[in-house]
Amino acid sequence: MLFEHAQDPARELCRIERDGARVTIHHHRTGEQGRLEVHDLASFDDARAEYDRQIVAVYARGYRLVRDWVDPPLRYDARLEAMIAEEPYDEARWLVLADWVLTQDDVRAEIVRFEQGRRTRDAAEAYGQYPVALFGGAHEAQLLTRPLSVAEWQAGHVRSCELALDARYGGEVMAAFAIAPATRLVRSLVLLPSDGDVVAAALRALASAPCRPVLRRLAIDLRCEYAPGALDPLFDGRAAPALATLELKTPPDDAPTILERLAGSPLRHTLRTLGLAPPHVSAALPDVAIRAPQF
Image (cartoon, rainbow, N blue to C red):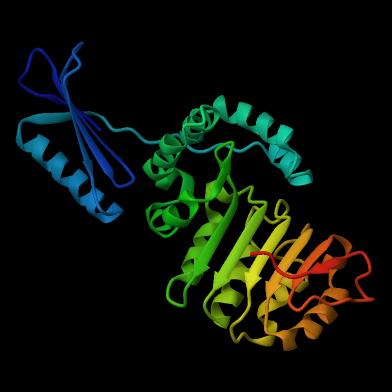
């Protein structure tokens, strides 16, 4: 937000901005550099409280609002997304997408510039500074900023990530992941659920996620007790219809049932590698290489 002092003919200005957990206050006169204050807060909630406090303070000092910025909406190109979905491991396609993102007036363009300059520290800061735009909302940002800030990013999008899903918030994390603008083109996903209910919730959320046609590798730790129907969105192809690599950590006794279900699943037409312990040989999946999980 930009404020000017109501009684100052020299236009004393104050700009207040909040990016993630950072609040910046820039005091200056027209044409002068002025003074910059940066407050790094412990959480998004603390930053929102500080942001509101600073706004109240400038109004109390006789300022008035000049302009209230709203981040431009993120735009999508269905043709480019379909190009990535066709072959998500073709790096040339990601470069084409990055060039397009640079032409858009949104926060992803700044991230692409960081990526191209190989300034990894600055890129990590950029992910934290624009959580609402990238992750779909303030609540989603609180759930996703930590795991996605250490994910693999390219062209302003998450390409590969790992999500730890606990019993309390795991369902919310996965629901946020499914709708986040930054995760539309995820090609590799590792899920670490803490219990069977979270397994079911995660796969239901994935079945409606925009990244479904792009996802080629899915790894799930299933060493927990889960209901027989929890894996239905996986085996019926809703969660990842183009999956090429599936890795499952399961109790050894579950392996025969998983092989049987995969043999009757649409995934048998796309799957090329199956991670399963202990490794098995399956006559029903002759084109699938079966090895130990690698995550």
